[in-house]
Structure formats: structure tokens, C-alpha cells
Length: 174
Image (cartoon, rainbow, N blue to C red; front, side, top):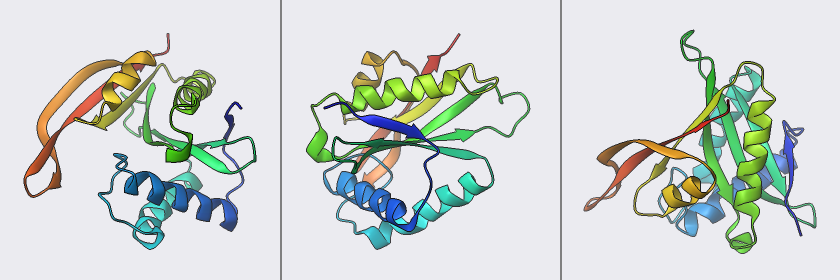
């Protein structure tokens, strides 16, 4: 079944709890979404609250994906630049698909929905994102049309002896 995506869903307590649970599940499955396992929802909640504050201020928008049963299965957050010379592109953060849905095309569907949503945003001409090296995410994003435009070796510390590259990807929308 296809992923159903919605931009700017109503942020009810139930939705926020589902996003928090998704984030914890993705992190605990090894997903590179800002945390290192093991984590619980209470570890994630402060970061989600930061995203919500930015949404309230209009600096961030949530793209939510639901599975065939209506459960939260995927997310991506758009963040807008405040610098006047960079307002023509946005960031895509916290791109996640629940581990139980991996391999079903949900990731590609989410990325296609993100591209479509950004194309409809006034003045946005590109999407920029970063990903953690060593995960294969950069190859996934390349298959979605993104191009690697930068890499900082060892910029992400996953553990005391595990440093990963910070990879910057770009998708032009023109």
C-alpha cells in the first residue's frame, strides 16, 4: 500500500506521541536521525519540542507519512533559512521511515512528496540535507535525485572510536 503524505498536519498530542515513538524506533534500529541507541521517547521529546517551537514560529514545517492503517510511518521536517541571501532554498531534516516499513518504497514516496511540497513553497528553488556517512543514506538520496555537494570527514561522533563523515546533499528544483 502507498504512503499517504500530508504537509502541516494538525499537531495533536496523539500525533506528537506517535512522531516521538517513530523517532525512537528509527534511532533504536540504527537510523541516523540525531541519536545513538538505545533511546526512549523521553530522550527524543526535547528535540521534538524544539521542532514544534520552530513550527509555531513558521520556521519549520512537518511532512507526515501514514501507512495504510493511518499510523504514522514517516516524517521529514522542512526548515527555512532566515538569511536574506539563502531564503531561496530550504533544509530537510529528520527524514524517517519506520523500520517495519523499510523496503516497501515508503522512503522514495516520502522524498517525492517532499520534493513536490518544496516546489509548491513560494520562492524555494532547492532542498539541502545532510546525512551520516557509513549508513548508505547518501546513496539512497542520490537515487532520489540529490547530488553530494560536500563532505566533512569525521565530523559526526557516534561513539568514542566511531567518527563518521557529515555529507551534504542538494536537490535543485528549477
